[in-house]
Image (tube, rainbow, N blue to C red):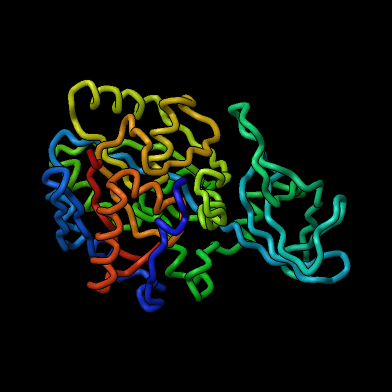
Length: 355
């Protein structure tokens, strides 16, 4: 049995980054590599040094999802306060959302959002589970199907707030509107940023291209489930959340060519990696609940750029599978001992696949 306690660690609270640094590329970068199966090398770098770790011919894959203003405050018919945390937009006027209130929301009730002088009525249709497009079992989740009177994304842009992670203590401000989005963000739909991508700015991406690094994109809309802790001691019993992804034809061709020519495929973030690895079995688009734990055989990805992840999280299990559980444990302890910054606005790692 793979135990949850194997993926726990103690993190001093002061190492949880609350704000981004002035420059995207000035975060620290921990290079984690093994010269053989027994020797671990940890190199302390600055993120802009990534240009020296990537080489001509590498295929670098970004997640180009865009975070939507998914947190909305409102009131019930009765006047009670509610908070919506949107999970997924389903159509022009419908979406799935969590509803936080003193009492559970009822079907056919109405929630009013926006200014009190001109509130927008949102109808609660029913409690709903996410039904994947891949004919897999539906996810057990406390979501509600909501109907908006007009285009829901446009309404969210008017009245919603950026949904910062629960470990960031401040409400989203003007700086967050810019810095909690990657510079490649294009397709609205995520409720959390693909945080490894936050370290790249346009000049760095251009520098990499000029150095002969090939750049491609996938889209995986990060859901609120990314912050859901694993609550079972037997890790294999955990129910992974579903997230929608798509792989453009140009990216699929680029991956196939890189693998055929023996060039490295490097993912920017765990979300890009999950999309690419999911496509091997599920196809170029769909819903993935791919749960990667130690023992998983990676079919595509050779290296990974990623932030530091929460204790007991599925993402910590993923990087442990990729770089080796013991290697990750030592790397995280090194990062703590050297005061690296953790989580969304924190520092990054460059991981090579453990063989």
